[in-house]
Image 1 (cartoon, rainbow, N blue to C red):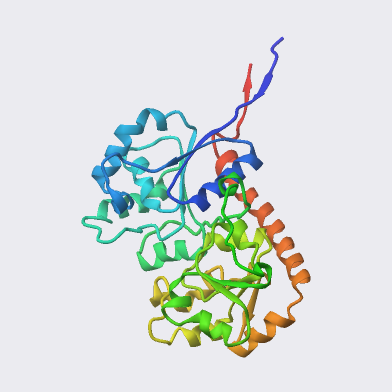
Image 2 (cartoon, rainbow, N blue to C red; image 1 turned 90 degrees about the horizontal axis):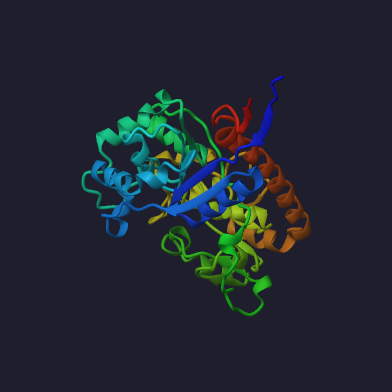
Length: 348
């Protein structure tokens, strides 16, 4: 009589990235879904400095030749932060599972980028739809819009947003040392908060206590009263971490944002697409209740005082929990269920 033996095959996944937040997110997902994860910061062995972001045909081949035996140890590879990392595997016909997580425009290049992105790279990305072993997903809806509409490719509309749970990557940090930190709002070092306007000066004129500068990771950020910010990017991974840590964000309402966008020196990624701001995390329906929107500076002053902080943190917790479960379901589909039609192997 034949007997079936069942055993669980633990998937071996390699995550290649430059970004600490992406590293943290995939580590958390591996813990929840039970696959074996290895992290590697991308390198090709020949690039110097920021040229590593500009993955030419030559550099992709160099990385493949340098690490081919290491890469072949894995069942699945995830590339994140900058999609050109995936060229190593697309160009060299990697036959196992490949997931390209686009986090900052699929053709991101560090300038000046001589010879990159090149037409072959665009053709490789556009060919993903013909490769059953490859999935390409944005970490915000704008990523696929940009590829499909602005660049004229056809990559589908799949999206997996970061979860933002905090793991071992952020275990050690040096907290910012300021008096009354829990009663002080933070304004980051970003363009619209500092160059477009002096947001600190404006907010302080409203009688709101603020700290203006860098912070040392999400746990440090959570020790402030909240964040006051004028968005400059379609998505920030720090925002998802903030939801999970119940950090309150105050940002301009859509109408006030458009009003500010008419000021000199206002900067937003792909500014010519600003009418698609609903595709960003700041103004999408998914996180509308997570943010505190202000319609004017007077409205900000009022909402900082009148906001029920305890209630809003409960809202953040509810949103964060739902977002985590929904997102884990998507990653399970991409990493486990689609990989070799499942990871439970039967042996006769």
